[in-house]
Image (cartoon, rainbow, N blue to C red; front, side):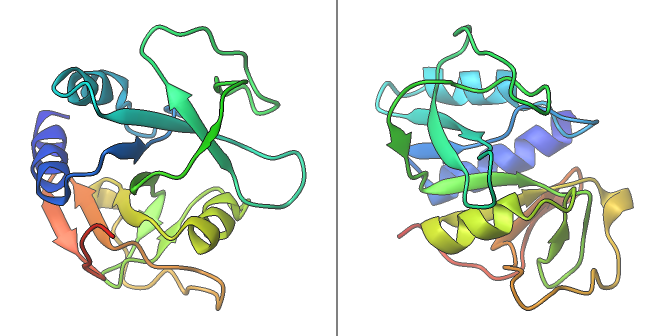
Length: 164
């Protein structure tokens, strides 16, 4: 995981978000909690946010996360901040079960990130492992490519753009 974190750190430093969205580790996804806690500790003006999955089809809401805070489990068994104002992250770290060179990804099929990215329009950084790289994920018309993909091999610009 160390190389992965180095590449992620270099990219996030370059993009310099003040509000960073990330995901609680689920089903073998990268566990970024310690990395995000370190990122937060480096600058008091930084904010980290976790998604809250809606009960009906729609975009997720992001709420502030502070290391060690109490969080109930959602209906999927994932801890989430149950209260707090909705935030719009500058950059969202998005887990990838599979991804291609064009920056398209496959998740768990719920469409949560597709709907959320369409509404929030943050810089989207897909996080995956090299073994999950495929030739083509066969994106659907509603899919949005990631701006960047980070793996243990490096950070790759697929649809590069900087912060707003």
